[in-house]
Length: 339
View 1 (cartoon, rainbow, N blue to C red):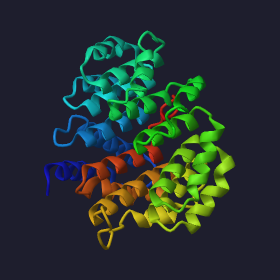
View 2: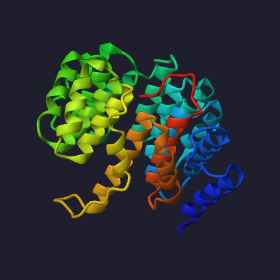
View 3: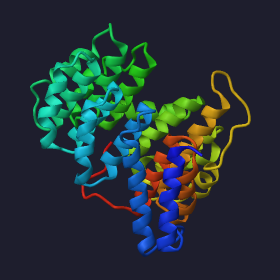
View 4: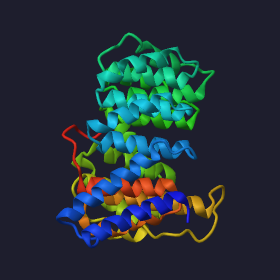
């Protein structure tokens, strides 16, 4: 058993000794389960073996944690991995953490384009638009595709509908990552054209595009798309697509996808597909199942999610389960959920 699994399991055993079991949805057990889930996220924030896990833990804490998590996220501005610094800056901007403004400004002098883009975006969210022009500059920098994707992503988080005119210039770019980020950001900023494109993509028959479109439309939490989500949950060919539809329904308050998501927590792919190993398929489905259960917020999922948080071999699955548990049980922040 890995040290990480042992740590999470010991946390679970400790709670069982004091609470007499964790599957219950009421009383002290709820608080202790929530605290263990938060502890799991905090554990992975400095996790040195995976920058991806650090990013996932950071974003989860930023979304569901109280202001007490902000100092930990500020520390991540000094992380060795650009992806973690990028996520930290954007999270602090979205949380309106003015204490971090000076540290965020320092990233503007970084040699990493992602640092500069995230810093400019975070400062914009804090009301400082002095560096906002950098985002547009990088969006059109054809020498750096990764920077263009980052810039397109950040535009969608600024809450400036006027940015749709800028994003429209790259939404048909050759780079699929840039196209996807631009389309998502435009939809988040209210573009009717982008939303219509996503609806069309839901029915185009390509699994990844369907899943992406359903995920973005789900984040909009617009009941206009409820029937689309319900139809795709029933008729989609791919399990990931069905789960994305179930998650979108969950964000609208529906529990119709509960059984689907609960069963998918134990999914195991049978064979490798072209350029898609079975292990990767298994991971994606299980992670999406956990986030779907978090969106549905039905306490019947607490026991299975606790088991995933305690026993999963992949840290990313433990983090997904912990975040889902907090979504279901709390604590709840007064601020609106981050996008």
